[in-house]
Image (spheres, helix red, strand yellow):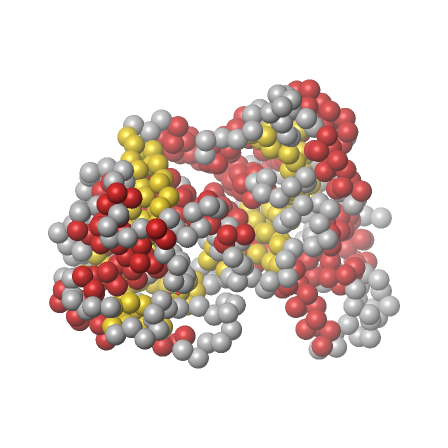
Length: 581
Ligand code: GLN
């Protein structure tokens, strides 16, 4: 039976069929290929980093790639997840709140993604239950197989049609053996059967451990982990071995024999100083060539375009490897224990550092113990400071003390969302003389609610997906630092995730005190960027510019901060390109 026959079978929707695979209009088998990445042994191995690096290598070859992350959890999106447990909540331009891996894909591929590129079990079950209520299953009992697995495959195929992708990269959240993602893995097995040979490539990520008491690498956990996948009907084509140091041939051989994957396709994916160095390593190990052969897409490769892309990327990597300067940026944060909760921020700093030939060290400052009396001591080693996004009361007075120290001592300052709001509170209290000024998020009945709920937020009861979310245009005021940093652009597009704003009733008083609002929502009195003249760099934004910073197109906000921390002009010789998007 040919693959097309299989597809015809599964697409038949008579009442008693056991097949259920809705096919989007215009779907052509073999047009889009699939790379599916599974995790074994444990979570947090960097499936997103592997998948995005591989996707980048294929994109460099001129292929069109479309990544998608499938999450096992029942939440509809990642918006209600605690970053302490799950890493940061990333926000897409269309307002979808997603897992941090979507940020990795956007950065690595320099591509804006949408909700089509992200799904959770909650979304699939929701869709299936709604269909059931609408009577769409015509008397059938609704089952995990074929109905839920059918939705999963349909989502991938719709993405393929919509993006015209040559290769769809599917990242399965969690680890083989979890209850939550078992039906995803089953759906991928079906997908491979239906799409036929050379159309689906399975990749298993695994972990090679090196216990310090033994001093050698051990492969058993990896073997057993991959065995779980084999039991579920997934024969990987490729295995990526995560490890601290390069995986030895002996260990690769063991894994190869155990899994029937040839040695040439068992890769060592050991730690690198930066994730941006991983694509280069994978290219040297020919992972990309293995995949283009397995998927038979060699004829879609454009070698000229590839060489150009490689040259640009290598130039960036060289700057990452050999920084000529060093600065230290303090970051105040509630989640100081978990780096992942600030993933995009750290990347944005890295992008800006690379553009300015600088290695940027991060100093975490837990503000719960910072006061006006010890702020100077806490920040004595910092060349600049970031107060990032945040929610709730904890540590806010310490943040405000840090802002004051930065303002009064000309320490370069960047306030992001909550950090923008804290800069307003500090300025209102200590410059405008509005004693007790605060955000109503922190103190409901403050005498001076300089930060207050957005009017549109007043009636909002639901917690999920209800903030002011996603990409929005920001109008820049000519002549300001913000306008110059964006090369004179009239508007820029930035991403948002907030409920509170500068209270419009206080804008004039803040201005009278000397605060400059250099960016605002077009046609609305929502202030989006602030700056202080007579300070080397004191900038805040209600947005999250870290979500749109890209390796080769760093965010001007971060460039400005790092430049100022290096003692240079915030509008330096690098031309930020964010404004030209
Ligand atoms: N808690 C603030 C608000 O909701 C800031 C949010 C943020 O930093 N993302 O407006």
